[in-house]
Amino acid sequence: MKIVYFVESTALFGGTKVIFRQAEALARRGHDVLVVSPEERPAWFEGELAFVKGLVSDLPHMEGVDWFIGTYYLHLRDMFSLSSVGARMFHLSQGYEGGWPEAEPYIHEIESVYRLPLPRLVVSRELKRRLRRMFGGRYYVAGQGIEHRYFHPAESGMAESHTVQRVFLMGTYPASVKNVERALIALRLAKERMGASFQLVRITTSDTRAEEEELYGPIDRYHVALAPHEVAEVLREGGVMLCPNMAGEGFGLPAVEAMACGVPVILSAIPSHMSFYWKRDYAIFVDPEDVYCMALAVSKLLPEAGIRAKLAKKGLRVAQRFRFEAVARRIEWSLKMEGVVRRIVGRRGLNG
Image (cartoon, one colour):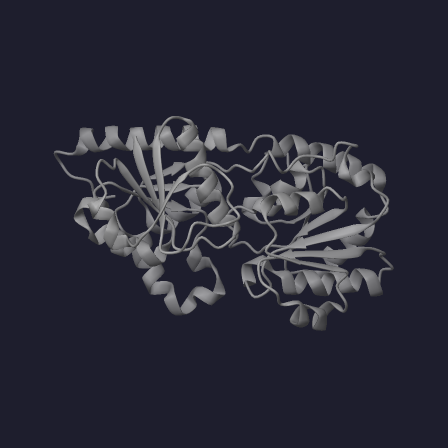
């Protein structure tokens, strides 16, 4: 199959990284895959993958395309309005954009896009349930993968065996769904009121250090726009990962990447985090709105090497389940199945 992904931006965000890795995995399975974006080919992506700088208006001129995959609500309506594209189009959703408070001014546009009669690829069953309940339609679960070539335990053993106490906190500060503001307050509470001793290691895509230090105080290490292999190297230094995301989070990639490096995790008790594995014994779960609960979890886990070791081992096993090779197989099946559905019901028409 010839498959074209259209990407709004090639900036280094988790969602963009997933799109490129999906495309790369499909190409390894023998498909002709092209990524198109208005922005330049990203320097952070080292894989071999066909890429073209272009606009939505360029898509109809591409020959022999079996499926177009739109990846963000801002360009989906324009793609769908082009008859030669919309008739062969999927919507890849990694999370519902309308679930963020920042989206309120655009909620009508977002909702109208999700009501378009398009088949959708989603990264989790939980997201499928949520979107189907809200909008109806046809959904195919592609699942999620992580870059195991980068995210793996330290050769010397699990990361939690290191003696330096660190707390990793990932996510962009202004994004409310990432809940970094509450996490910083919780970590300050753990250090100043509960006597926890640790280095805070921030990993983010934009530099808001000054604003964050007003909440927390001096941050020990502050990393901005690290490439994936650099993030993995930092995580393998050892510590505990706090993932405080709110319920609007579509998946929670940093949590699984940390687990793949042998880092024990404290996760917010949200549907996406709790759906990584049915046993739910791979993390300590906390209320994302309760800073005291987060602070207590951090202060209790840091000195407990035995518990950290158990969580690290269970997390590593869970992380092994998330592979882009499996994602590519599911996407391939989904595209073929959608073709079958359209042939069967084509006489009556599809209403989404």
